[in-house]
Length: 291
Image (cartoon, rainbow, N blue to C red):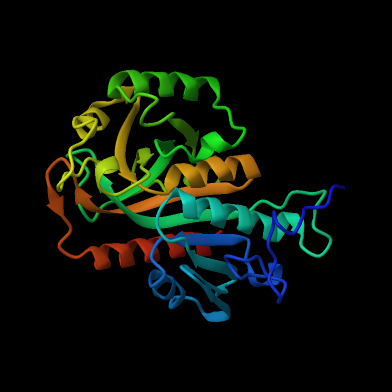
């Protein structure tokens, strides 16, 4: 088995992966990711007990027990670049022997659930509601650095997306990946479902204009109007497609669930976004604890 060199996978002095500062025994196999480091404690306060707390840069993690379920909640920070770090290091903790620096012969799959915030792109999805992402459609380019290929339906969906939105190669080479059927079946009632677009930024890439003009000023309208068979784009944010894509490549089960804090069509913002996020956290933990 080929050895992974020190420059390719950095292990710190306590035997933990570098960015997350986690050792294998400090990670549960069901993981909740949140963007905001402060939100880790908002999730873990519901645990019956906390076994491990680690913190390095924007990556804060708490591992504990809720009922009979062992869970880890970890912050990713914002954007696909951070997801690249988090997903690869989570996978390394369970699928690479960190002492011998070799890939383990048997895959250990993780359940990874993103609980985050998002902006709705449909007028009928109000603020403070919840969206489960059936697909992550990336205009962020991260997955284009890996060997990834969509299935036939996804290829057709992508072709239609490029045609309808008029995105060109100067902006992005879009990619798409579906959610885990293993996880999404648990989040049906009282959730909206649809395609989530992942953007590489918050302002221009999401159609916001402050002092700079946009190369595709009609992007929001084109995302809202996009349809392909039963599919439509419900929302956009900055992590889902990279979680789905890397999760699929690495063999993990991934799902993204968002509290809608803004509606970009009706121009509304949540009057109490923290309450909406808290409610989503409780609903997600209640569901997970029943598995």
